[in-house]
Image 1 (spheres, rainbow, N blue to C red):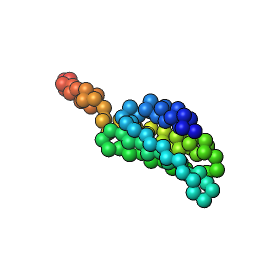
Image 2: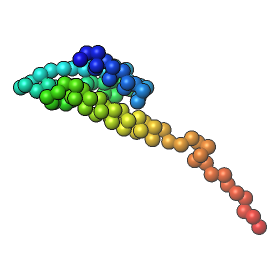
Image 3: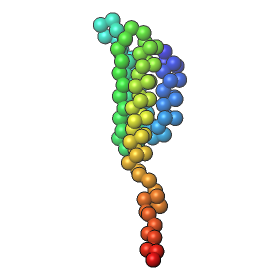
Length: 98
């Protein structure tokens, strides 16, 4: 299970380059498996996904899917915040033709 989790979490940095660590926690409560992944990124960004279920492998896949969605949304927000380059925002003035 540990090698499967390492393999899956190794693919997360390709979605968001600023990802620094990912901690996977396996637990069992009331006969169900509880899996939680806490990933930290640059500028104190924290991404958390947790799933309860019967199948540990299925829980891990669902957690990875949730984290991928969070990372994509965060990357889109950061990219949208930057705005277009200055050259694209300036409109050249035309002299009035007479």
